[in-house]
Length: 492
Image 1 (tube, rainbow, N blue to C red):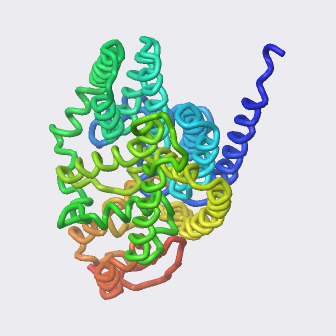
Image 2: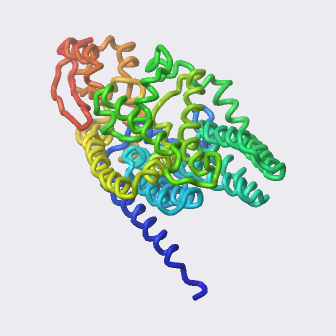
Image 3: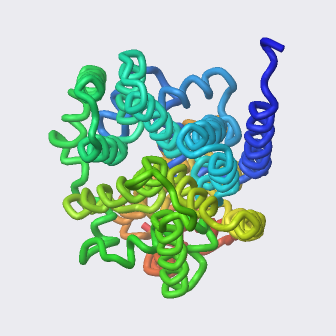
């Protein structure tokens, strides 16, 4: 009967619903329980102000604006909490699962689509990054939409598809600058594929239009970020890879995409071996010929894209990092849907029973990794530190944090809890030491010292204990320690 979905369409929706239900249960579980950490607080700081303030903050940083605009709309509408701050990332993650399902359905059929959606929905790496107030899941969504529309241009070549594809590319770049690796991989694929001039013209128009839209919307501020301020000056990632990016670093990053927190907890050699084994097996399954004779010649486009959509941007991203050492596994969240597509295409090439059995075992590994992820939370406990300080601080007391990043995080939570005035009483240890040489001069007032990295601040702690009177010590979550001191009797 007209107007009713076919049985095949109903099955597609049921499988998609199952994938989204699995993703939702894991992503929303204790979403607002853990305190926010530095990067999340920075995102909230950008978005919890006016639009002009947001633009000004991003001008002095290295981020694209689209995610922060979405976060601004969310916190302005629903209020500020850990839950509402993380909500946009989860919603973008769910939309990515749905978009990947339709991409794989169009590309390779229902079996690959179901496998891909389930793998991504249960991916501990993808869930972990979607649960944070960061732009990563939105970058994955825009990357997936760009591939859907890119395929429409390849198959149909209509101007409407080309306009949509150009818009998706622009939005991807306005979400995450490294999305250029996704777009470049599509350019290379189109260049290597024989296409009618009509389709090439549509693609060229889409790329030109997306570049023009991006530069018109954000070009001057991008110039300020990258050149006027030298945004990557003294980037701490340079110190992380002093000898440059090595193959083992790439293997570790891909292993984290496959296995999430569990991969980070494995020994490096075991992780590299598992990652290489899974990758090589996937490649072999996808590129091997069918056992049955076929009239079709050449390498099918579906299998080509299943390989290229993940490994192409990964190779381009590594090439970028050879010039600018900005290699960080979480940046590969934009490639997580295509890692799921790669694994799904490999599973679909296995005998049916073996592929389904292996897919059925994946949730066990995913849940094990997810449990390890939950056990690692919170990353940082600025909320606990702020509450402990607010419970006993006096207007004349002083707060000292052990590093430069700690001060704005603690100040923001104090402001959140209704004490913005405490920012005037808050100093980094370097600032405090330059004025006092570590000696607190007031025996009747309290010095509150927040150690966010106790293992790395032994000298600060020893100095304070040597020239002040310790009055209390409180252990907080995530290894945080809050100590209180008074000045010594007769201190100047």
